[in-house]
Amino acid sequence: YQYGIIVDPVRINSLKEFGTPEEVAARVVTAEVNRDGVFDVTLVKDPIIEETSGSYILNYLSKGKRGDKHFVCKIAVAKNKLYVLTAQVKEEKYLSME
Image 1 (cartoon, rainbow, N blue to C red):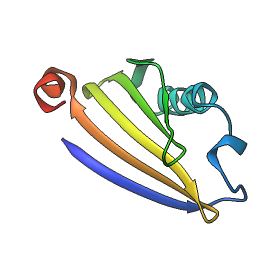
Image 2: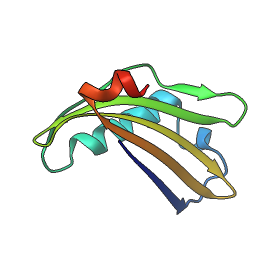
Image 3: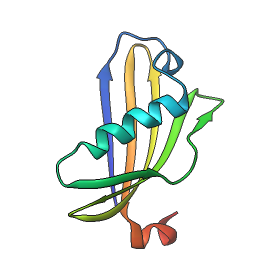
Image 4: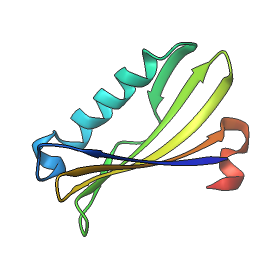
């Protein structure tokens, strides 16, 4: 498995200004499917909003020439910064890692 954190400045004050969990998930899926070597991306579960933090949690499967990978992302905006925490694991190992 692998983890990654991205922090980027943004001009919005909350994730809701960027879109609903479903709209953000659609943007992430579109960006992922347009990556080189990726054939298909599907949401595994409906995106959810974490009420206490206002963050969104996305769970999706990416199929590509490097194999099938399961991603879980937590996305948040605070103090005009976008935070994205991503965990990635090969699909065949996902159930034991969940």
